Picture 1: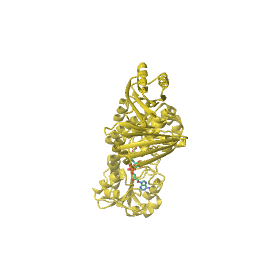
Picture 2: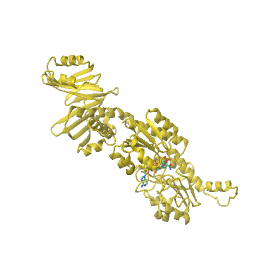
Picture 3: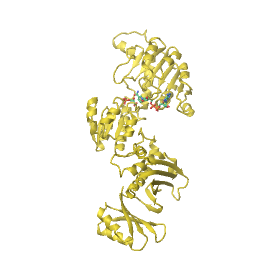
Picture 4: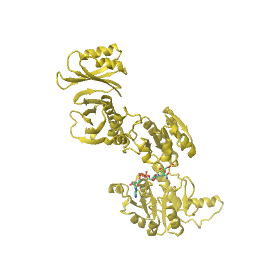
Length: 526
Ligand SMILES: NC(=O)C1=CN([C@@H]2O[C@H](COP(=O)(O)OP(=O)(O)OC[C@H]3O[C@@H](n4cnc5c(N)ncnc54)[C@H](O)[C@@H]3O)[C@@H](O)[C@H]2O)C=CC1
Ligand SMILES: O=C(O)C(=O)COP(=O)(O)O
């Protein structure tokens, strides 16, 4: 596997990538042309906020499996294009939030007290205190737009300055406002009217781009001070320029521009703007954290494992992922049985989760089941990202339900696959020791610890057959590890499950099929 690191990440991250045994090319400052020409050679790319991962890029990235965003915002990455191609996008949403919050406060203080302007003057050997009178934060109102990860860190930090914190975020609960000591504002207009300082911490979306513009500056307090350490254009640059020039806005602290990485903006030349070139995440701590996290995630994703920060997958917290992991493995195993036992096309897949497993984010386990079902039969890569799209494109209904009866197990995952004429059922559980067990196949009960190589044989339930199977496998040098026979009614058909230590050649399977009393034999590879 080959990974391209296209923007600077911490050495710790590069070392982690190298230690994984994967091939790593670090090409900082690669031109767009070079990138498009060479990306077909890579399985993964790691970027920050500069590289545009868009349709044009995907068209060239024919082998790409993972995009690692070494950072938080993913507005430079087109998500639909990734998802439809089965490309996993991972980011590191928690790794640089403290640095971004601290930089926000740095911008708020330095613009409110004219620190960079005064610094520049004295460096020019001019002592002038007349122009730099600033404002205190104590008893002022700060309006926070977006009380997510960074907004909430800013809220609690500014309270220690004695500020009154108000916030506008229509997408969070009242409890979250209370938790971070922020007075909830129902509308942006209310927040704007009451604030002495406004700081924005939303993602860049159609709704937030330009959300603070001329209309807002019309109703803002004269002398309001603003900070944007989120994304360029959330505070409209042209409107802000006007408001800074006509005195509505006294000062602005800006870390992000619309047209990055070009230093082009009407704000740059204004004296009452303190501006940094997107430095919010640029601390040694954040970069170590981001680099290490993204490297680990990219490696996991390339190995086909579930990663907690996959942006185009259901969100999982680290802890939940740890609890869910055994079920992901179980789901994939159960899924893999189907096409190795049946050649039918599928119309419907029903999955019933019962017992302990039902309390988790089961949609992710469903993805692992779909991955298991399609992997043995498709040439294209199947992973957590594109598994449900593959099912949809094949016209398969996928239905997930929570059951009340886990039979005698602590947890039970039961899959019912309906094809044109028949139904196939398989069920599994995670044992108390955390191991996968297949406990039912098509109504036959068993307790199978699945292994890499398995033989499943349907036979007439009569004496002598098991012995012949054992002898024939022995003659063909296939070592049987375990064997189980399951029957529902004496004398009818039974299912025989053998786990064996090695691959079984086709001709050996044919020999087994020829035993009198054997109805059919299938080989399953996990
Ligand atoms: N300057 C820098 O170097 C950095 C910038 N960022 C940026 O900071 C911003 C915030 O990041 P996080 O706090 O991690 O995001 P987050 O996703 O944790 O929080 C965003 C909050 O905005 C709220 N929101 C969304 N639309 C809204 C709307 N129309 N009105 C009001 N609230 C709305 C959401 O409900 C959410 O609570 C992002 O734009 C991110 O890209 C993040 C890290 C570093
Ligand atoms: O993590 C983010 O969202 C940031 O804005 C930081 O971007 P960067 O990785 O420094 O280009």
